[in-house]
Length: 474
Ligand code: MN
Image 1 (spheres, helix red, strand yellow):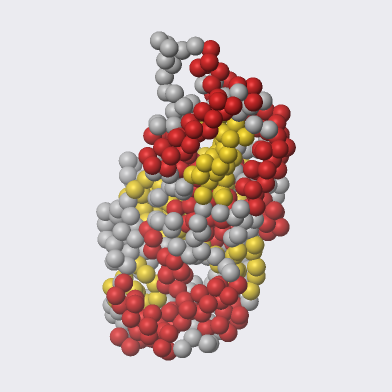
Image 2: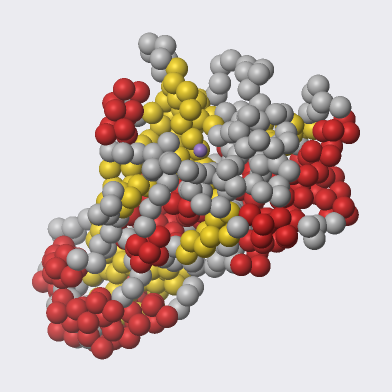
């Protein structure tokens, strides 16, 4: 996966000196045991590191400063084994610039009625400590996550792991750089947005380039480079010239490969992890980027068509959250209104993300009415089935909103011999009518990012971390 970074999370346990040195030693040992158990048994997406037992404002401040400055650390998980007066958490928590999860758990699973005494109660009082600590986080409005349950519980494991993915998304979001070749498609409304606000709120850099900059980069691509990628494609995909003359087919695929290599070099030089194209702005290009985009998607680059930088950045974000599994840019196309078998056909004119592919992609060269260029090469396949969700971001003028809708992706029952693009079919939840009505009422766009590889809470928690309004249709 492109630019994937090593990440870890720190575990901090809070207490106070009231209970004596022995009790504190026990608190520390228990915390370490919990961390070990989570690392071994919870299947967490990222490692958890026991960092400190903290009992004073200075200690808390010092840990939070370290969390902020260590790039490897994506967030901090706190636990109150005992009561930890929360005024001392104020300075450190105010400094914290990374996601915080308050784990409301307890070392013992059950109340030991036969042996319980006041010493036990003083040591094992998470229920007491959680409320004091939770109050100060609520008052500071830090958008932290609270996960409740015994640390050996599977639901707790899943919630922590999902939150870790959100937090890694939060970190990755600050580094997303989108290169836009051309502006937004003329007259389209929903793809517009306030780029300065996106930089402030989500950390996104969105830079414009003339398509000539890409054409220039492409001019340095050699025939040898192109042949080597062509050979690779021969192994990875079914070459499907169809009715095309073989030479015509090969030269058109190679032109697309030239775009791919030029694009990749351009993006690498500028440190871009996402990009957009616009079919209205192709001066000097022979084809609209199709297979080129798809193959870069497969490497982890975010993308959206028609200059839609918001969706391109979101695509990159969700690709980081899923390690680039079954995630990509999508567009709502055609409804099927058969009663009891309603669905939406999802596709794009060329650039459907091959991480969705259920079938081995075919390389196809076909005419494209849009863009007024040569027949572009594209990968064609049927999409996977499974549970997923789709998201769309819109700028309402006063603020950004994220619309989220779960769906069930199904395998197409029918062949589509005349459709030269990849297709993904989904049935939105809770039902077709409600979903579409609510989506339209919420202003959800036709460009989305869909994934089959993530719990929707991961995106919802990320939205909370960045103060983003969400509309969940479920
Ligand atoms: Mn589009």
